[in-house]
Length: 337
Image (tube, rainbow, N blue to C red; front, side):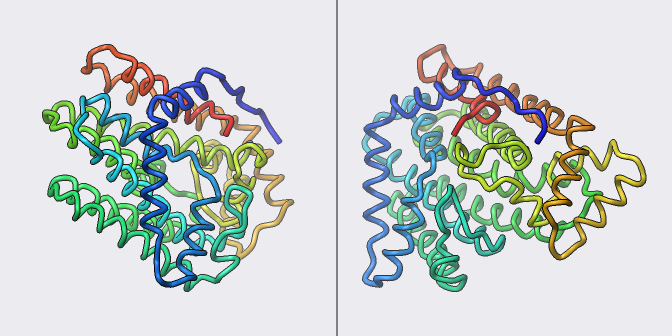
């Protein structure tokens, strides 16, 4: 299966430290999400409840809360409301993703589309987005409304861009980075900048937290894409080889295409063009990934973004909040859940 990158307890501890620090607020976020799921349509309640009960780290909500706390926000519960909003955007995009990818499992649990069908799943995803926009309007901050609404558009553009380049073995790394910046890092960035906006931070601090979230999101997605080839599904809730079998060109494949010989490039091009890929295709691809150390190279690339993310918080005074958020940057590379 290839080299398994060792997991570091300190990185996972950083996530737990952040969760414990904000546990009371996070509980309020969960309560608000449940409140927003209420509907007179029974199927909406069933589907959204099933989807949101399937687990998840609530990392984006925690980033919103943590950034607000770092920035000195302490005036009421706007941070809770907007953290719930960010989480609802994320949940809606996952519902849509599962339909696009024809996924049957998420975090080891049957997806809503595999139980209730694609049409209902798309509509429930739209319902979650509409509830999120209700929260934003109720909050009334035009800067945050513009930020989160534009982020929703970016995520959609990223998904379409990924579909546009599906099956391309010769995908450029710059194009790949653009895709994951739109579909993943944009929401991380919006979450952390929202925290700064809530506190009325100056532009320098807003930009620092925006950059922190963006680079953390890039590192997180690159590491997640690498997990497709070496992760343990019982720990990560991720089907091994899922991206490969869907024909997605991610960084490990970009690396082996760049380093491989003509015969290996031709092999990769042919299998990605196929309507369906086999277990034998996956095994041969894994052999190339091991040959060219593509997992290690991918995580090295992610490490660059981790370091940038860590450094952007340097403008803030030393504090427990800052330490936890800086330590969290390694979570994407070394998480065990």
